[in-house]
Length: 469
View (cartoon, rainbow, N blue to C red):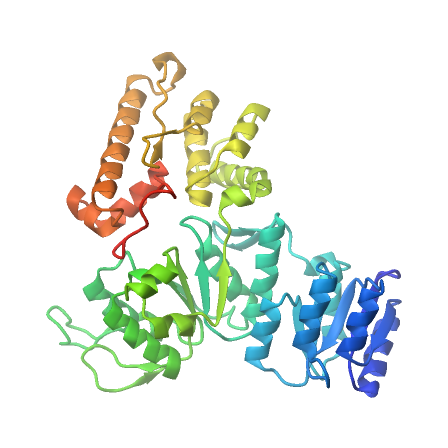
């Protein structure tokens, strides 16, 4: 344990102050105390800069939440752990939003206090996650930037509060990975985690996929089938692309959120479940609410807590770590020796904006590993725009520079033609992806894949995504 860390303990009960102070001083922490929120704020204003604040939630005068808010205004970098006799979900969520690092429910044992203090102060590295945190096969969470470390800290807190969480962010930023992290850190970690992509399942099948059906419920339903909610009882379900769920089905989902019960298709009996719901989307929320694409009551139910993942271009310090990790994973998967990343390639990767985020970076490493051509890989990172915001690689290549020869040139030409056709269809439909898919005579899912594959991005200064996008 550290003998220099300074902890400010704030509690209005003298007995609790003495008890916690004794527990901390046993481990040689320097402990300052305050019996009110006002006193704590005043001491920090006068120059006290504690490494950690342990703050009681319920106090006379300004309460713990108000004190937390004022402390972070005076000393923005301070780490705060909230203490309370009552496990109040609403107040826990407020505390997280205001920047609390953790939450302890009184009475607690010394081991619980030690674990929280060690993690906040970083004195026990076993409790502190590394930059790359393995979650499952080929699933990992990277927290190397300040923004992602904050996301990781929030995930640890919200994981223990059994409320819905809405995950926002551009396509490919890692919303599913974040959902898996929340599940892993929650008391439900040993139970089932399931993901349902609401955009990938046809609207008329999505209800039966989620809630199941009885035999005879519709043509072809010869046997009863449980839905994802039944299969995920006591676990966590991620509803990905929640903005693509039909409004009528959103109403049924709202009922499940409120009452934790539903009926299978073709059945009158009610099934009760205990499922934690996480939802993810990259849609424009205000626009979706205004156009009734997303029910307002469902949104506010799901929005008990919102986490927004920053795009990769806003956390460039993670690019080298991700490149190395993806290279290691891909090399193992394809039984190849990892390829080196020259200073020139690394610089090109750091300067590139990665419109497809982690998904694009993963595909980039896969192509580089398979083709083994660094010059070709670097050329991929210098896309040209068609003037409408769609970006794709049009740089001419010398056949001698390409390990694929004529086949590679044909493939590049095909890719460029597809990207141009998709961009034109999107422009013609005002970026309504469903209409564009119909125009191109491909499935909606195939269109989404190709948009990500070619890194087609809509210019911010041009159209907004329409309601059906």
